[in-house]
Amino acid sequence: MAAETSHRVATSFETFFQRDYHSEAPDLRRLYENAKRDQWNASRDIDWKMSVDLERGIFADELIDGHGSEYWNRLDKRRQSELNVEFSCWRLSQLLHGEEGAMLACSQLVDMVPGNDAKFFQTTQVQDEARHAEVLSRYLIEKAGGRRVAEFIRSPPTSRPCLIISWARANGSSKPLACSLSPRLLRWRCSEC
Image (cartoon, rainbow, N blue to C red; front, side, top):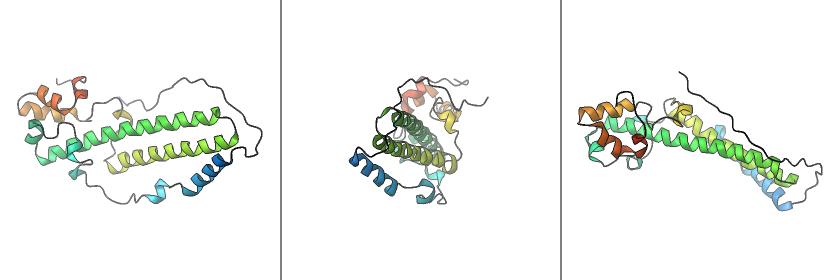
């Protein structure tokens, strides 16, 4: 079954349609001009050809749930790296979904703010949030092994939870491992649990 990749969110707000095109807020116009001049381009300014060694993980191991626990320490380096990548991708995908939400919220502000100077400037914020979403999605898809980004928002922090469960069963019990890895896992139940 394919994961849902979108859902509707009902919104209601008043839109200001501005018909006076003279600049009324020079400071906002200046910020808009600066933003146009200074914005970076994720396609041009990031070296997407650079390889990423997933066998080394993505985040520092110290940032991974369960790091330093007796269960983590029993894992071989390969398993630790696999969990590092899964947990890192889960966290990055949560950030990605937040950036997408910020882009949508900022886009609504374009409608709501009065005056073209404010509207022009607000569009730069929309573009900024779009760049963040672009970078995070490209990294997850192109550099982190094509992880299923859309599914991560509703998934446990590993797309292969039975990797955790099977390791834990081989070393005693899955419950202590789940407790040491993350409270999120306590709310999730796999068919093998």
